[in-house]
Picture 1 (cartoon, rainbow, N blue to C red):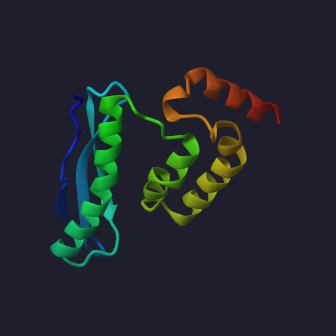
Picture 2: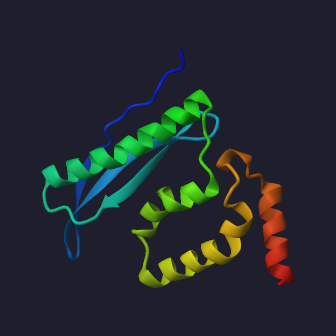
Picture 3: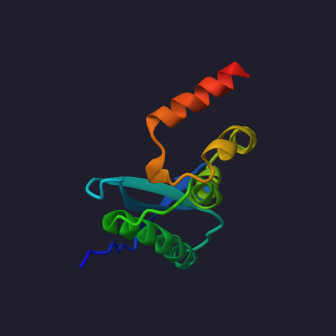
Length: 137
């Protein structure tokens, strides 16, 4: 029986110039299932620890599901699914101009070529071909 991954994550208050924010800290597995990489992300719009914990619990459901899939070798996540889910969370931490640029690049350059590929199938050679095609245009 394969093991599954479960963690609650740790929420921490952090002082910023504009006020207090809550940050979620958790670990994700790499594609081998061995190494764990520590990640942090800001929990948007939380005014109390209770709100932050509620939002973190929802986020951790997805993180734990992905970690368990990596451990059991069931990573069927496509690039398009990654873009629709985890990528959207990443964009919340960027400036508006960066979000516009990255969204455009994703839509025009990456999704047409890599959209239906599973993440575990994308190799460095695919990225090289993508960059060659982009430069040719």
